[in-house]
Image 1 (spheres, rainbow, N blue to C red):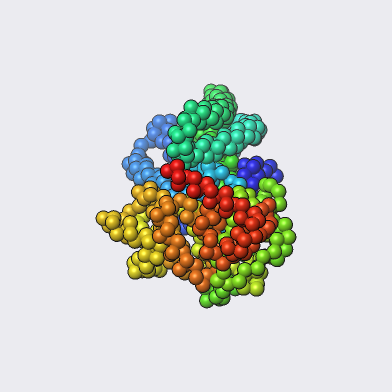
Image 2 (image 1 turned 120 degrees about the vertical axis):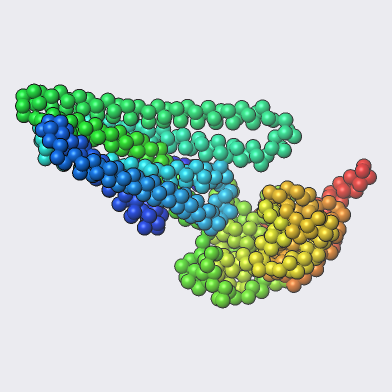
Length: 607
């Protein structure tokens, strides 16, 4: 998926990503229209300025007639004020478009990220996503406001100048017309080269962003393994590749403007030479020669401006392709149109149509494989009655987490069906399932804010009393009440001010406050010390009562009270039953339990 995103092919139509982006810009229609009007008026003002000067040269210098000089000065001052107002207007609306575009692009990208399934994040590096939402959106907002203004102004000015010059003196105007094909051919040639190198630079930039992210998140591991030098060298390699690619892109982009400048001012020199001969021959007035020279210079100024904008567009093309690929990415797991009509979307749910979830779960001939790797489950069948406390045990890779992820619809079966309350869960909305789901991860994820805020994420309309009750059930209140601000204590970024066990207790409370019908505990007690675990085991017993629950655990002491223990191996259930019965069978579970019990006993003796 990541490679596909990086290698998107828009060779057939470079405008494809821009169509999407321009539809976003046009949502701010009023500002866009006002910006266009300002640019048109500015182009007209630029065309009028040389005509003012021609009139002054012809009237006051060549003819030496001064009867209109007062009116001319008044008009000139009024024109200057008008020009200033136009410039202020387009600056205001261009800034507004820039801010709006960046906001909308980031909002749509983040909105899409909320819809995407686990599989997308499994296969797409965080750095790639972060680069799309930050640098790409910023680059596009700039080019769409200031770049578009420069391009549109330049185009209108060029067309206006050509019309005026062809009317004034077609022969001199042909000099400019003759140079245009050369400019266009050079622009097209350079356009392809610049785009190629900027695409390469943007790809490496994503890798650098990912490396930054890994460096931040893995700082403790890097220091504990003493691999700072190795990490630095790996980053330096990426940075050198980016520098090489970016310098090449900058070099070709830098050549673009000067070559256009040379071609353009060759046209100015030819105009001056031919026009000077006409003045000496008496077929052209000095004021008219001034007008042609001024317009010729003004003609190539917008050409240079357009050339620069085209270079920027080549750079932004890569950004446009990537951010649009994110915004328009079709999630692999999504509700059908029929389901959306009835139940709504994740962002606009029709909760009045949500049926109560009882908790009966059934796997019917389910096979599943991840995007990369072998088949994890094959023709898997399982039936769980509502209210059953199920424990999943087995070695890493046996399929425990896969079963839970399929139940939660983080992934969907490759073949087969999963039924909830006797109905294929694809016939109901993802939002309906997730609103009835509680999930406690092995590594607790908290957010910046207070304890109250974090627990209430499980139920956004929860009161402080609801939060306190949930915390009391999992015994989190014991450490919360010792804090200065109790439930309103700020826990820092990611809960950095709390211990790992304290964070896990809050994640328990957050899951429970939603009163879920299906509760998943994924190694949820592995990060809690023995004392805390003893406290929470009683709470878990109370909480699991009446709910369908799934506990993934390597520490078998945490699952001895489960209603049903499923022993997994190679994607199959090789044993099932209660703890006592499985021990009496003296099978795979018995060996697992005996090995772990002996290891724990040995550790206690040593300690």
